[in-house]
Every structure is written in structure tokens, then in C-alpha cells.
Image (cartoon, rainbow over all chains, first blue to last red; front, side, top):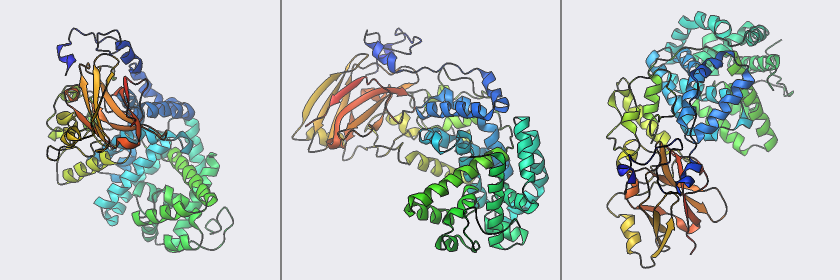
Length: 233
Length: 300
């Protein structure tokens, strides 16, 4: 029974109700229309203080969890450069990176309602998903030797743009640079190899020709030092 | 000395060569950073998670606190950005499970390419996903399988309604296609033939009625919509069982315009106090958007 078929005469009013019946008001109540998100909001990603962005992304995730496509589009606008950027650094291959980005956002769509603001920031939630996906993909599709070779080739790039060029706020960029400098070179190297190289601690150890327990310590100590310096609590 | 092994919390001694050794020697919490960095193998990740699920609350809390902090640290530190291809958003939207596609209120995606909306309008039978969505290759099957698996994950996957939304929803791998009930052994017939059939009819806000044929012996009900208007553009009807024990309503599936004309079977009614119908955005919701447009008590 599809009344809508006969229903070009029924109004698709601003409420979105299609029934002519007076009780259609009941339908209206439950229909949450989403105002068009101004395109300019997309630009906010690079200039907003982290707290504002976090708040915005949390609101969007809540709406996405309820099936709101407009919220999904805005969330994508605000975060896709980060997700794709990470995938490219880990996977190098553009096509694999696109696939991975696609998987990540499908996962966002499906799991948005599981996002818990108390368990971390939305960006951290998203990038955790992204990194995990990229790493899973790179480990299943490339031998570690390939990865190391590719990583080596792209290292300079990473060192350059990861901290300076692309960082949204200058202050934040400066803080990151300053804090990275509090790490020893070997700590920085180990953390980077794991993060962008998708290497396990064991693979990092092999690559750096160091003892496995030593590498574990470097990664742990490096991240704790960064955390302390950046004031992450 | 920066590479000592005495963690923040004063445990002494070294990391071992393996995660198993660390777990055994009481250094589980010190694995938080490696875990957050995905610098462990899949097996090790599972071992850590298994360990934590059985660990004392204090240890578990400390571990996941450190994991959370490490992740926030990483997200602030490694910030490369790169513009994805202009059509990627369209490709993603085309893959959303049981979606109506961008409706009138969806802002233009970053780069509007071929319109997904026309192909995926709710109620339109959709034969298949566009084959051209991704460059093919041997990987395509694996990707498709992975997508299917994702859609089957608990939470979004409850019983679907028999006979509903068949063409469109199944082709799209709709949210909650759990056990689509095929013709043979049709539960619909089983319910309708049941000896203890009861009938109930409730009004649907917006017009029409929903008729329920309830069978306790089959633990199921058949729901038939009569004269109910199609959901508003970009919306679907979603059915819920409201559990007797006061826990959260459980989605029973979606009904778009096309599905309205077909009876649907809802199973597992014995633990439910009522059946509710709501209007939700295309793709459905995790929890009902109130008020319901119809609610029928199932009480035996």
C-alpha cells in the first residue's frame, strides 16, 4: 500500500510529512530535518581551536549515529584530509589508501553511536580506527621488507610535513615541535617507524638492529614523554 | 638514561622479548603505549585484550587510561593531511548500507560527482551496487566480503522483517539483514496457521492502521500495514520490540515505501511488552526517535 504513489499531490512540505491527514502532525514531530551545513564550515577544520572542533565532531557523531547524512557529509569534510593523509603515509599506494579511507568512513557511519565522549576525543576515536585499518591493510598486503623500503623512501617527507606545514594552529605546531625535541632521536625514530611504517615493535627492533626490550621501552618512554610535554591528561 | 625499564609506576626489571612474557611478569600496563600505537601483532593484541578483560579493575583502568592518553598524544603529534580524490565521498555514500542516498537536505558533498541519489532513492528497487564504484582487481571480492561482515556486526544487525523492503534493502545489504526469511518454511505462513492466533489493530499516526496477527506458540507476530502513507522523503519506518524488562527497544528492521505493502514477521515476541513503529532517517537508527507513530501491546 503505497499512498505516496498517488501522492504528488501530498505535500512534501518543509516538515517532510507526506500524509494529508490531520494526524500527519505526529509524523512531523519525529522528523528531524537537518539544515544545510554551510560549506564554509569545512574550512573550520584547520583554524578551530581543538576544543571547538572536538565539540563539533561529537555533535556530528551523535547525529550520524541517528542516521543523519548531512552530519556525515560535514564530518567527512572536516576529517577526510586527516584520514586520507594518514592512509597515504602508511600505505603509500593511492588506491589502497582510498580503499582504506572508504572503509574507515563506512565504519564511522556504522559505529558512530558507539562513540563515547568520555573515552576520548572524536578525532582520537577516528584516527584510532584509521590507523588500525591502515596497519591491518599494510601488514596483509605488503611484506615488512617492502614496507621498510617504502617507508625509508618517504621518511623525509614525513619528517617535514608531519609537524610543521599541515598543523592547524601555529601554537599547537610549535608545541608539537618543542615536545618532539624532548624525545631522544632513537625514541622519535622508533615511534615514527611504528606509527607511519605500520611496524610492530619486533619489526622496529629488526630494522634498527636493536634489542626487542629496548625498542619496547623506547616507544613507551617516548610516548609518555610526549604526553607529559603536551599536557595530555 | 632514557631507556630504563622502570616504568612510571616504579616496576623494575625489563620488558621481555614477547608480549606473553610481559603479561606473565606483571607488566601488562606498560604495554599500553605499544597497544595504542598498534605496534603489536594481531595475536598479541588479542592476548592483551583477553588479559585485560580478566584483570582487576584498577589495572584495567590504568591500562585504558594510558591507552587513551597515548592516542590523544598521537593524534596531536602526527597530523599529516592530504586531500582525498574528489569523488571519494560519493563512492562512500554509494556504499552506505540501506541508505536513501543524499536527500534534499544533504549538503553538497565535497565534490559532487555522479549522483548517488537517483540510484538509491528509498523504495526504488536497486539491482546491485554500481560495479564501477571501485577499481576492480582480485581484492574486490575480499572488500565486498569485508563490507558484508561489517554490516552483520551486532548492534546494527537484528532480525530483519520477512518480506519487507526485499529488493532495495537486500540489494543494498540493508542495516539489519540478519535472517531474511525466504519463501520456503515461510514463518509468515507458520504464524498465520498457528492455532493460537490473536489479532490486534492499532492506528498509525499519519493515517492507516497496523494489524498484528500474534501467535504465542510461534513466538512471533505478523504485521500488516493498511493504508499507511509512505514515509516522508529520506525517512523510513522502523519497527521495535519493547522488552518487558525495561531494557532498550530492539530494532526489528526498516520499512520503506515499497515494504509497506507486504506483511512482515517479527519474531521473539515473548520477551516483549509491545511493538512500536517510529519514523527514522533512511538507514534506520540505533534507538527509536520518539514519539512512536504506532504502538501495539503484545501482552499475552
